[in-house]
Image (tube, rainbow, N blue to C red; front, side, top):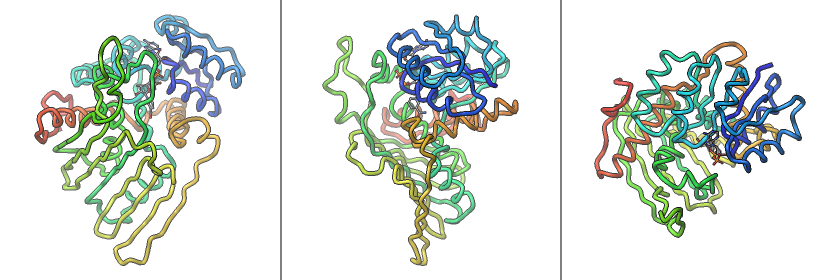
Length: 360
Ligand SMILES: NC(=O)c1ccc[n+]([C@@H]2O[C@H](COP(=O)([O-])OP(=O)(O)OC[C@H]3O[C@@H](n4cnc5c(N)ncnc54)[C@H](O)[C@@H]3O)[C@@H](O)[C@H]2O)c1
């Protein structure tokens, strides 16, 4: 058995619990959250599933002092990730940090230094790669079906940010900004699909529709709700992110294309179709990719949380590194920060950033 602790039992923390409950050999031993509503939600979920006692804590410091967890899931608000990881660095445990790994380049630099001396092993929850239709799309793109990919387009048309505990996600200072908070997933997908690093980012976007009629302690939320982000990659491929967060009527939330000299490959979520359209016009050929029902029902992310946790659990069990690293987390963060700097200046921003921990 691998003994798990959870820090942060809100929406995503509870999704982790639901999925860990499906994984053989995963025992959730302890859960920490200062918010009683979140702890009660976690308790209700564990009552239906747990075959062993779970201990609940208000403070994660007390949890880690009393429990000896093999693995910890960190699902607290974005701006708390770095400080909590710093507090846990002395533990001999594996930590899955929810995305974004942190929210500033200063914390990213400090995290890289911390990891060099830490006793804990770190992994980052950039889980979109694990949605079964997307995994299949990526495998087919990597197999070269479309030819070397020259163009990649990611369209995310979805509902506005949901309410969160203490409304932390309404302000850039807590989230890192929309292009970090939400879009680190898509920047990670760009790097993963293209197997390359970005050299230039240009972004245009604004807060045009959402949250403008809300106030918290006299402040109106400052998070953008739409953007186009163009990214040039070192090898010459180019990518675009088309983000709209007031498109809840959209049939497909994500539509991703790669195009190369042989043709176009496309995937849609939730449609779960991978469509191949060769240039000879013999297509389109549609493959529907099913996701197991238990994984679909255990979360809001088309099975991604289940398959990510399965991979994490396997890595912890085998004592091997998790495929998604702190470097992946920081590079996706850096792309989001570069996009926000581009929004602020109206200019394209070169990568790597001056304040990155990675010079190449
Ligand atoms: N992988 C994904 O697709 C995905 C989806 C949603 C959220 N997330 C990430 O998960 C994290 C949590 O988001 P959420 O949607 O669950 O937010 P949430 O507000 O629903 O839950 C956050 C919880 O963390 C708790 N918390 C705050 N400070 C804490 C501390 N010091 N110790 C313990 N608990 C603390 C809060 O009380 C709250 O219960 C964020 O980093 C978010 O970006 C990832």
